[in-house]
Length: 176
Image 1: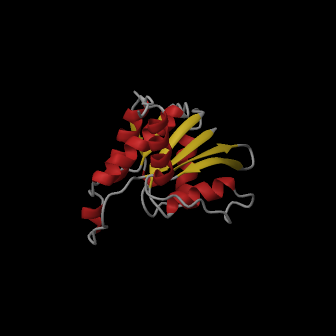
Image 2 (image 1 turned 180 degrees about the vertical axis):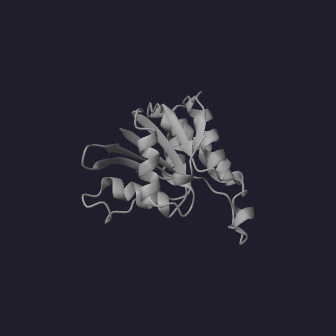
Image 3 (image 1 turned 120 degrees about the horizontal axis):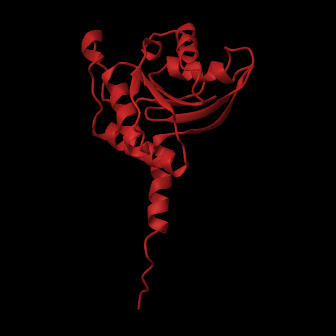
């Protein structure tokens, strides 16, 4: 199984009221981050069978925007195992429910998403943490006993790569 861990993109400042915070939307920078992530995943020829998101608005928007950029035409599923405060046992149940799929993208929040990614790659299941910045995506190949982190890309890296690729593809003009 290949898991893509995607932390929701930038959504501004946290709101102190938990119910209102659940409805916090992506800001302009977050929407831009989603574009870079989706285009990079497309360039890397990433195809996912299913996208599963936290039900919170900022994660759902991230899942939708990145999925659209990738050409994902399936349904986006929502699971409480990706909510802030969900535990690793909740995440394992989520994986069990979608075990028939080989390529899965999960979209959620920190610190739990970083912890889940780390526990998937550590031998004893608790020592590693994958630092997922807002809008970052990591690819982990899950085997029988443990997973292997293939890569982890931050929005800053993705933006730099996108800019470099766009500049190198521009026609060269001669100066006389």
